[in-house]
Each structure stands twice: as C-alpha cells, then as structure tokens.
Length: 80
Image 1 (cartoon, rainbow, N blue to C red):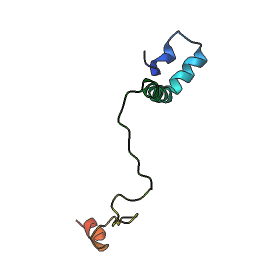
Image 2: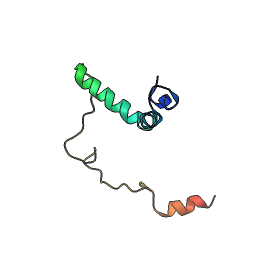
Image 3: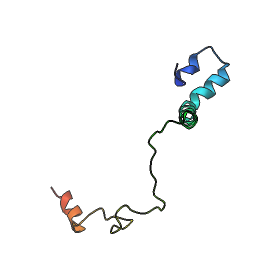
Image 4: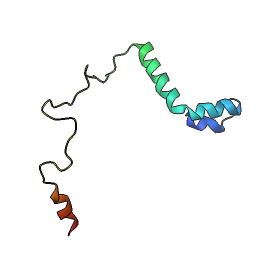
C-alpha cells in the first residue's frame, strides 16, 4: 500500500492517516535514506564540489541572454 493511498485506509485514526498522506513523500525519502545507511550496500552518491563556482572558470556568473548578438536584434525580431 502506498502512503498517499493511506488517507482512505482503515488502519489508523483519521488524523494519523491524514498526516501520513500529507507527508508521504518526506516519509518515503527519509525511510529510503535510513535503509541505505543501515544496510550498508554501496550506492552511487552525488559528488558535490567543495566550493560553489561556475563549472567553466572562464565563464562569468551572469550570462548575457543575447549571447554574441547585439541588443537591437531583439527589436528586429519583433518586426516580422
């Protein structure tokens, strides 16, 4: 039985079923993380860099939405 469908089940009082249904995604994520930790099987994890920076060192934080095009090309694109 999925946690989302537990809202209509007869196992718990209505308040408990409502809370389980409202927090079903959080309960599922936390239970799977706990299971992964307790079982000890190697699962691939996301490698996060130590510092928060752009992936390309030559690129700036803010990128021009026009790219290499001049600013007036936006106005020219509205004409056709």
